[in-house]
Length: 426
Ligand SMILES: [Zn+2]
Figure 1 (cartoon, helix red, strand yellow):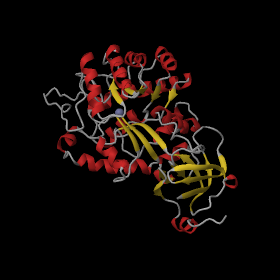
Figure 2 (cartoon, protein in one colour):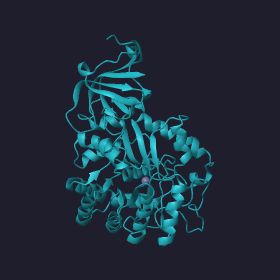
Figure 3 (cartoon, rainbow, N blue to C red):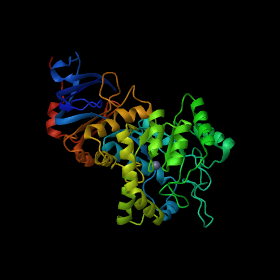
């Protein structure tokens, strides 16, 4: 089965000049040919035509930090929501993610392996994903939801979702093994405190460097599984980078020394600039955010922006990630505008959301750019993202989303596109 996308400007994810009058030929779920429309050899077979109607053709976007099974819940709602409802709700979250043009994600915690498999089996629509199951966390750290009332949310577990608390070399090693057994593709660890946790602070260092090294080593034993670290304070980030952690999430207090270390180790930074902003927005519009999260978000928001800007300017590899779940799913591409506000060009923000994000996930051989042989994950936008990066925030500008060769969303003028679907003469 062939599909020809034509009549668009191609932004292929490599960061070069966009190609006018471009076309992309798909064969099943692979990209067969890319270039100017007149350079593409038409196959001697039936071809379905997708007319981009002067839109822009891009690789499927990749968000390297999401939480596919949660969305801004206050404690009351968390305690009263029926357990299975979380699974049904994730169907809606994943649909919104696809509608936003995000065709691949890395899940930073709390998504069940069954949800991932349901997408893979085609039972529900959703992005391709790598999951971490549950983040590893120390007693009293970010991710420990033990309350001073004595109530303990953390130790709520079910088949496939062990709790993530572990302390000391023996326990962290065992916890990595347990999380991998539950289906993790990557290991997530909390190397510092955070904004949304009740009893700690972003600056607090969590896990020793020795513990982090064991986590990295144990994951690497399993065919090179990578470790992503929630890390905000500079000391915790340093420990994580020295231990060989693959990506630093959030990175609020990156000083010169940390940035040097990240450059030396080739560590990725996943900024999640949208996270503190959306915490404050939620505080204005609802009672979903606890007081400590609002206070800490206010405290770090400017520092965070400056920290990410310094790392980007120094040349640290930046992969787009939002923390979707802390904000509403489907608003992911707001992050690109924020990345431009810290100094990136729109093209750099797009590359961070396609090619670099694919590299961060280790999927660069099959995703991240529109190139021959790669998987057919393609987005068509109505507006020019280079001229107006903010236009990507409006999901009605994301007119077509193709994942794995299958059209998952199509808002293109129905009548017009219907008459254009047919057999090409050659
Ligand atoms: Zn997160």
